[in-house]
Image: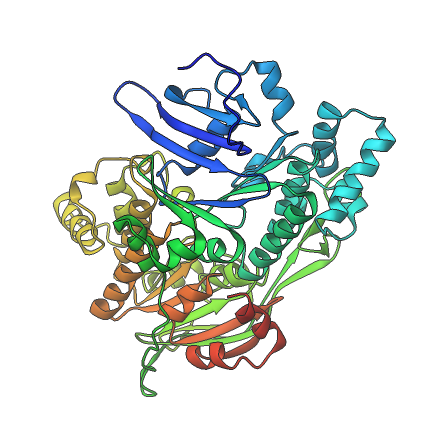
Amino acid sequence: MPPDVICDQTPAPLLSIQNLSAEFGPGAPVLIDVNLSVMAGQRLALVGESGSGKTLTALSILRLQEDLQYTAGRVCFAGQNMLSASNAALRQIRGRAIGMIFQEPMTALNPLKSIGDQIGEVIVQHEGGTKAIVQARVIELLEQVQLPDPAERARALPYQLSGGQRQRAMIAMALACRPQLLIADEPTTALDVTLQRQIMELLTALQRELGMAVLLITHDLNLVRRYSDWVAVMQQGRIVEQGTVADIFTHPKHAYTQQLLAAAPVAVPLPLIAPEAPTVLAARGLSVVFKQPKPRGSARTWRDGFSATRPFIALDQLDLSLAAGETLGVIGESGSGKSTLALALLRLIRAQGAIEIDGKPVQELSEAAFRPFRRAIQIVFQDPFGALSPRMTVGEIIGEGLRVHEPQLSNQERHDKIAAVMAAVGLANTGLHRYPHEFSGGQRQRIAIARALILRPRILILDEPTSALDATVQKQILALLRELQETLGLSYLFITHDLRVVQAMAHRVLVLYQGRVVEAGDTVQIFKAPQQAYTQQLVASL
């Protein structure tokens, strides 16, 4: 590792990563000869599949990954080598000259401190000032990121804000000291399309206003195309290709770049389900109302803009029907009621209205009477890592439903069924005795699908099944779901904020807004000629 602190400044990019290699231990390289430069005011996107080294590269800029051993290269920021800089020098740069928006604001923010206090800490650390000056600057920053009622939001704890509001608060914190470089690590991953567009347009406007450079780390190629000038493609710890956005998207040279671009979902018109196809799932007048008690000591509690002292109507008189072999897409912004709908149909939360499975009313059944119907309708949750118990092996996870619904099976019979369903989703049964953390994100999603299929359901509720996956893995999972639907005759209720996935997968679409269906119809028609203003806004975000 070179001992120099000052880097060669001719030519002078704001950030220059030169021949950087790093490992977590001998023989386990994670970054290999990485070369990357960011000019002042430039918008550079770093793309690649999960585990390719994107986030590690970003953390190396600020030297935040303490257990990472650097074996070669330099990271030069404004002429200073970050890898050999003192801790005192790093403290002056972190949060001041370089700001960072971390991938998941709910885990990056302190749950016990108000948003205003957390932003204020950054200001006090680097700029000082009286309490009144710091408070005024916090309000100014929250106004700058367009948070409504900034004084009220400054007093809120992170859980009292919506996903989009938390992301805006993270941006305000990163911009508190007017940095020269902003690192944005997957800033829109968990947001719906309208919020994605708002956040990215906000970042672009602030970047121009402040004249800062932006390093955008993302697996969303559509964001790269729209909001970046330059793009670098990363695979297995290496930069395999880089160039202008126009060049990379129109003339990709490396096979992996070509593979990434080809993985984007393609909107292919699907044949409509025959009118005589039986209805396997129906709901009429489905409503869900939550009562949110005010926490002790809070001035006011907010959730998606609603006061917590009032009932929150999550679903309002919703009707739907799903035919055998059909995919019904459910789209809408965060807080529109999509996941609440899934839980209500599964009777995992209390709801009013009528629910029918295979034409049989089930809403008023006792839990014991409803148990046989649970075999017919299963769910694949949004986050496969959070949905799989870390204390159970994959075989135990997949086979759990059999122990409940088919307790008469012998161990061998249960093993055979588990092995068969693993093969059906493309998993080797050699992983039966391994744990979820030993699998990739795509493999974990296959495990979740296998668990849902083990009871041979007719209906699968898919709640954002690909939102946490990069483009290549997403393509594999969507292909698997199509194949399973064709071979097993499954019906899907497909909940997603990714409109391109809906176009590629759904026969029909429901558009939810504030718990109500505002538009419904054939997928092609909805995207070609949306009738409602909200649907038009969603489609315009593509």
